[in-house]
Amino acid sequence: MIFFKRLCNECQKLEAVRHIKSTDEFFDILQKLKRLLSDGNYEYVGGNVPEKTVKQWPQDGLWYRIKCKSCGAIFTLWYDTFGGKGYFKNGK
Image 1 (spheres, rainbow, N blue to C red):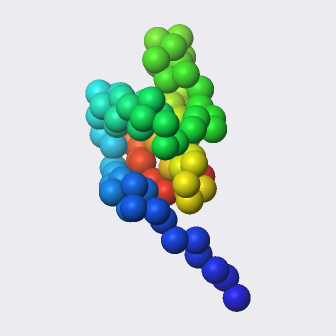
Image 2 (cartoon, helix red, strand yellow):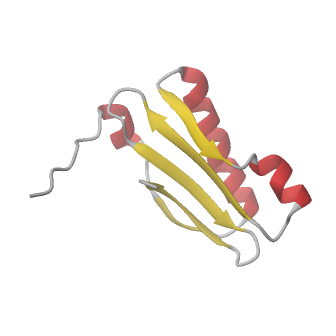
Image 3 (cartoon, one colour):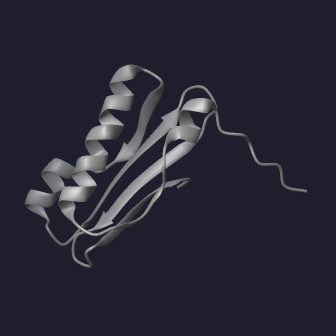
């Protein structure tokens, strides 16, 4: 039997983005995630410093991951700069 942990009220407000089509869209979402971190309800749990990576290795994937301090939900923002596609979702 599999049990799914319920998202807290704050995490329920975060909307998944199935198709990110540009680096501009990726960085818009990234700024929102950084604001969530500064509010103190979430913590940074991984990533590759997208601002530097996109300048040094433009063909690489950009990713950033945060975790809710309340319910433990993990959210991942990912973008493949070479393929021109990405997403923001709940989970790894």
